[in-house]
Length: 114
Image (cartoon, rainbow, N blue to C red):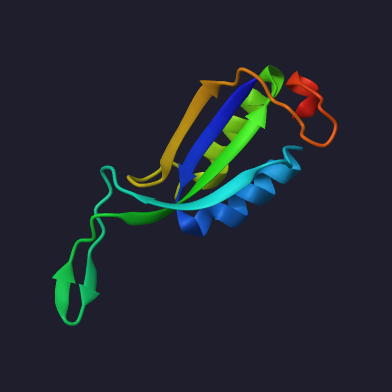
C-alpha cells in the first residue's frame, strides 16, 4: 500500500478529479494549502507590485494498493500539467509507504480497507 500526495494548482482540481474518476480511483482527500517552491507570482495590491510568500495550492491524498500506484501517478501527471511540457508551479507528487489502513466502521485492515 502507498500514500500518494500531490500538490497541484487550484485551477486543475476539477480536471484531476475527473481524470482520477475515469481511471477508477474514486477515494481521495482534498485540502487547500499554501506554499512556495520555484514558482514566483506577482500581484498588484493597492497599486504596488507584490510577490506573496505563499501561493495557494491544492493537496490531494490518495491511499492505493500497489497495483494502482502507476495508474494514479500517470493520471495526475497528465491532468495536472499546464501544457504538453508542463510549467514551473504545476506541482509535485510524493509516494510514501503506507504501513496500515483501518476502516473505522468495520475494523477491516490493510488493502481491503482502502
